[in-house]
Image (cartoon, rainbow, N blue to C red):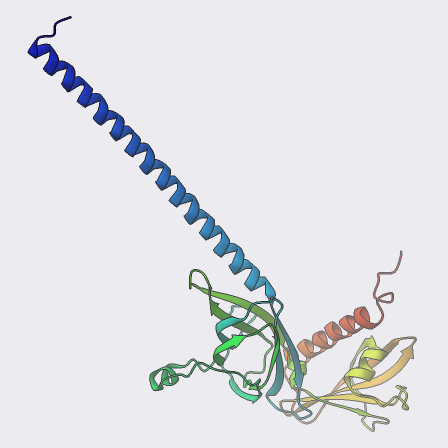
Length: 303
């Protein structure tokens, strides 16, 4: 078979075109495979980062213990415990505390003083950072190692109202460096700010009053009644707050229930909502005490 020069040129061009198309197709497939692999790698890395972040956040446990001082004042003590339950240290942590209204979440002003703190290797702050530091920040630039750390702070709250406290620890993600946080909400109640006393025999004349009942074990624990003394009619519990005193005079004892008459002492009476709030808080604490120490007694009775 004899090919003319024209046929030969046409044949060679077709061969070159097919080869370029094959190379282009191969390169396109290679790029697509590479892009797919990169995308899968990125998705896998993002998934691993998300899993690590969830693991760290779930491993950080925050607990608080709130108690008042044995004085009629505006100060309370808060013990804060951080527990890193993972096996990994968490660097770059910041610990802060804030107070807010339970109704509208508006910030409530307070003053904070740290009474005790753990020994930590801190990241030093420069003068600019110190000036800009948030007054709600309790500790900054520390590493939360596996195990527990504890702080004790005194809070002075001028407003005579219950509020919600929030403990927040924030730290950068190991993989993405974005900030993560773990929060813990706790209650700061009026009853924490009451001076609590118990008298074997009160001499007050009880006029118009309201009868309420509380668990006897709770009253003994809450008012620190000596074990050798009995809670009997004629004895009384006193709650002093903001210059006022609420007298809970024991009227009768019926099994674990102690009935008391609520009476106000002094020339100035506290606001009615303050008294109601304190009694509600006492009832809440009493029910919690029963569930903790007498779970059978806390079960609802059959009708």
